[in-house]
Image (cartoon, rainbow, N blue to C red; front, side, top):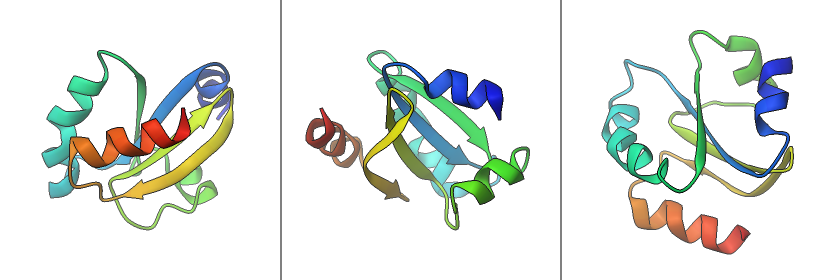
Length: 94
């Protein structure tokens, strides 16, 4: 948990709650890889990080949560469908 808090503590960070067996998670993987060129993205496996997933109330995956300087900002994107949808949320935040 401490390493997670350190990772989101400064700047703009996108946290992707996912599972390797999740079809929608696999589908958006190339989109997130592309966004990593511009944004810091942290991937959190719900299987390996159950406590963190529970703390953030993750019920469906993929779920993207946006943080700025350690604070959650904007709207969570649950099961995002496109790069455009993600970029629009980022634009609304920044």
